[in-house]
Length: 199
Ligand SMILES: C[S@@+](CC[C@H](N)C(=O)[O-])C[C@H]1O[C@@H](n2cnc3c(N)ncnc32)[C@H](O)[C@@H]1O
Image 1 (cartoon, rainbow, N blue to C red):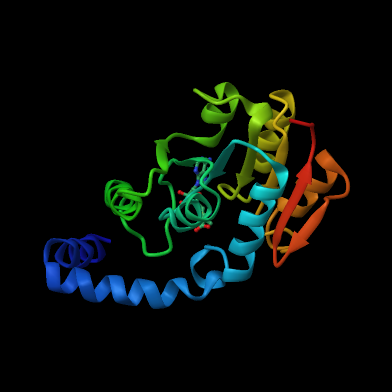
Image 2: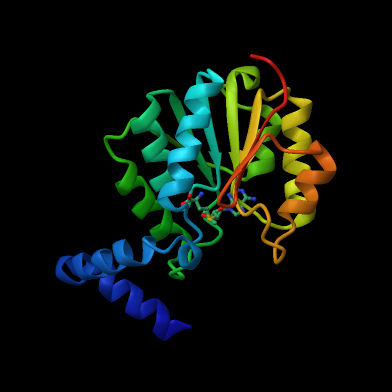
């Protein structure tokens, strides 16, 4: 473990190594299944759902490195809030480095990055009117966690709910979504979407 951390630190503290790591990261991110991030098809669908739903705010729960939030902001211009507790990333970066890297990716993008646990954020929606929001769930994929997040969204009367990894039986997402919301309105790749309340 110590060795692994030393290797990561070596990469992060040398600009040339960091550039090489980032180009490897770029290649890895092309494969959404490897990194937990969205495919191009899924990102396009998500932006079109945000535009078509007429919401004024997009909230991504579980932003990882911010690529999805950045692309939705660029495509739709709606207020975009990216939430993450920096508990997981596919490269084993320590949370502080993960956060710093994500902040760097989002620099100048006008995406608001909030370091928070999903439950804490969704319990209060700081500074957001939930009825004007599309909330995209892609944090924890455990059944109980997703159910809790969905229930908090329902309690807050979030207008449109969406998420990732629907149909992937190794996660608890599909069961939680079906039980809480019934049929979804649309599925593209493994992204799902449902309008729950009118804006
Ligand atoms: C699969 S990745 C998200 C991928 C991202 N949506 C994208 O499109 O690139 C999951 C992220 O959720 C975060 N996460 C996991 N559980 C969380 C929780 N309870 N609250 C907030 N973030 C969480 C992890 O730190 C990780 O960055």
